[in-house]
Image (tube, rainbow, N blue to C red; front, side, top):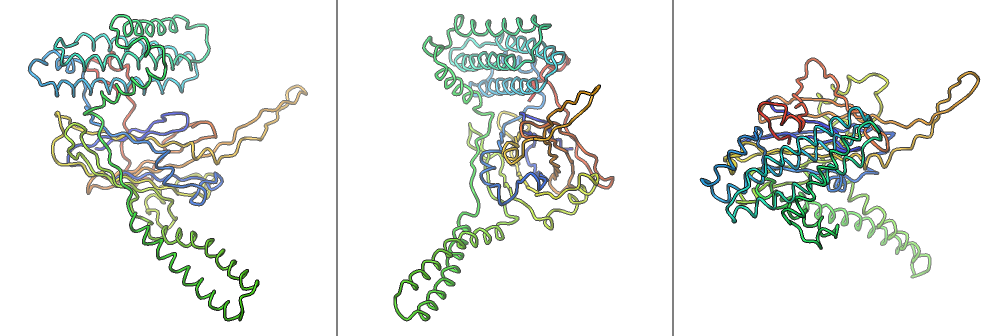
Length: 482
């Protein structure tokens, strides 16, 4: 059964991730129920702008059982492989290693209790140390292969150092965990010394210039993504249809304007100031209503149609891996599927408020051919930023008063909003599966994400539990967290 992982990514973002194999056809729908009091709607919110700025997707090859012993054996037996295969295996390990550290770092940023933060930071530090050692034990001796290894080693060393320093800079204040702080700082200093003094990966000029080192590491990250992250070709749909609608709207407006001008000329026999003012008013109304008529016609014609198409290609062979269609629009209540409406009727009476429904759909058709380099799946991660929603929210101005032994005190309270989210997953011709979440948020962060129960007659889909990077050392069969 298909699985979807749902988690909070940043302070104001939610990430959905799932895997697909060759031949899969999947449709994934998300219905955001935004309370009307938030002020987010079709008149105040541009869907196309939000798609390009607030929705971030990443599609890559995915190895579900990436065991470290297996990766090491691949490095050891490289004499029997080609340089292209070596680079693919190296990039897969380095990429998933980097993603795992980045993911665990973001999870640590959300912890404010020192008793939870520092023990997990200590475990993360141990795992990073072990993984870097195991990775470096398998350095190839062939100069042709060694350059690829050095690029990955340079980047992983720098990226691990940056992620640990960033996590430590956001750590909650506490004087009881100085040993953990010293341990993390010692690892960061050691990686810096290994990178700059022992291996001399970067020149002195690059080390001293933050812009140069950042740009170099960005280039190295792109190199290790080669063959793992899929190339995306995004194309907007309906461009020609939109031009046609614009022409029809302009023609209709001009037809009305021409009739009004003819009538005005018949009413005023001579060219007078009054006639000129009348014509000016007519042309002014033309400019006002032309855009409104065009937008109304375009929304009516575009309703229910996909907005974008995307082709996913293998960056090495340029072969097509999958094709996708993407929808994003505000929906009318009568267009919402009956099952989704039934799910939302399960809300408590106090939570049944008027809402605007923002609908996101992505339909994917994966090629039937086996993937390159024996990959078994591709993974799609889609991150939805709620920052554009938060911009419309009001700041909390209310105060709560309390009395204690005759002394009156007050406390400022924040204004919170609840966004309901219904997810629908349909694989091929199978029956759709559903899930519902309650997202409580304010202007600065997501307070809580909670899964809600569905009606008994509706089939839920399984949510994949979060795996943590520390499982690599604690499990007898470890795998890197993706």
